[in-house]
Picture 1 (cartoon, rainbow, N blue to C red):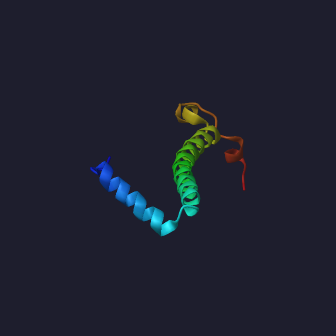
Picture 2 (picture 1 turned 45 degrees about the vertical axis):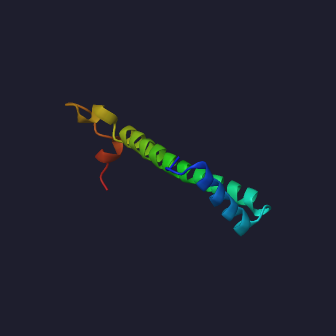
Picture 3 (picture 1 turned 30 degrees about the horizontal axis):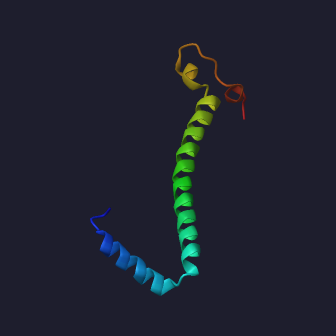
Amino acid sequence: MFGLKMGELLIIFLVILVLFGGTKLPQLGSSLGQAIRNFKKGFGTEAEGQAEANRQDSLTTGGTDANKTGARAPASASKDA
């Protein structure tokens, strides 16, 4: 684990315990876990949002049928403005 031995991890844990105290450690751990979850969720929703945008774009433009010869233009395109 990151090239740290058990003794080094124990010393790091003791220093953190002295700095933050026993009552703050659970709060610190839960807030760190929540931050990591939100970070992962942010990347996941960005990818899902991009896929959804691509799907919506293909639906509104007619998808692959719009590129075929003889395909109809959307009704809104034929109206004069």
